[in-house]
Image (cartoon, rainbow, N blue to C red; front, side, top):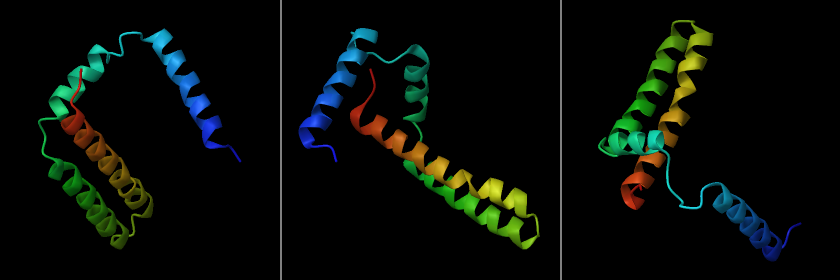
Length: 95
């Protein structure tokens, strides 16, 4: 098992490598544009999209469309992760 010191050393190595690649610590143009537009959306949008995909999946399952239900049901975690990303951008801002 790794000690906290080992983890700190690994984190330092990763940070140093990242600094060599992107010394200004700036986001790319595409990421900045996406963050600018997604930060305007209310967080509820992502939550309701997740609930909607779960409900749609349930309806599809009751209609015996199992593969489609599984596909649509797997959207929920993606929407929730996008909601988390949106919240982080709103709280911490972007470059």
